[in-house]
Amino acid sequence: MKYITNIIIAVSLLVPLSAAETLPPDVSRVIAMRDTEIKRINQRCVIELERLKVSYTKRGDLKNAVLVDNLIKGMKARQEIVGSWLFDFRGKPRAYTFHENGSMSGAYASSGSRFNGTWKADGDNVEISNERGEIIANVAMSAEGGPSMKTTSYNVVMSGKKID
Image (cartoon, rainbow, N blue to C red; front, side):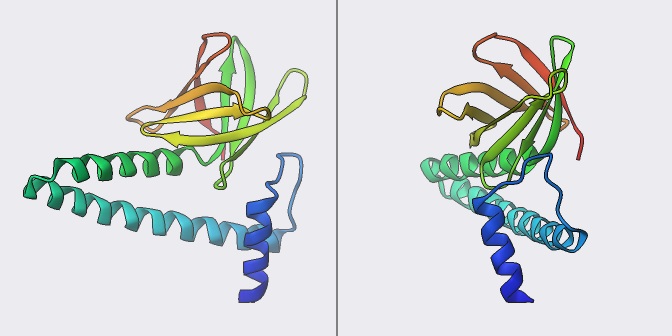
């Protein structure tokens, strides 16, 4: 079972699923188990990094305290954005799915046409790039955990809500 799980994890990291593809229930269960474990590991890592940040601050090592703080912010942004979100673009919904491996897929609700890209955490923000590697939007997570996406080409801010 461990061998099969490792294969599924490796494949899922290399080939992200689009929203239209569905997995058999037993495979979905294994992927969900992996996602849960990743979240637990990341939470433990953030707790340890918080302790190190306090330790560096108390010692007066502000350079490393700031470095660790930036790592924490990036990890929290990554944890918060993973999943499926619905953003309102001028009254028309757009669905985005941010995968743990840094890939992103989406769909225009009105036309059903799909788009793909990548995302990366940049401090408190998440940068979204299209297939050509051009940054097309930035997402900032609010204190309540809700995202606000600002597009680069239209200079429009879209609020989002988690749908999975």
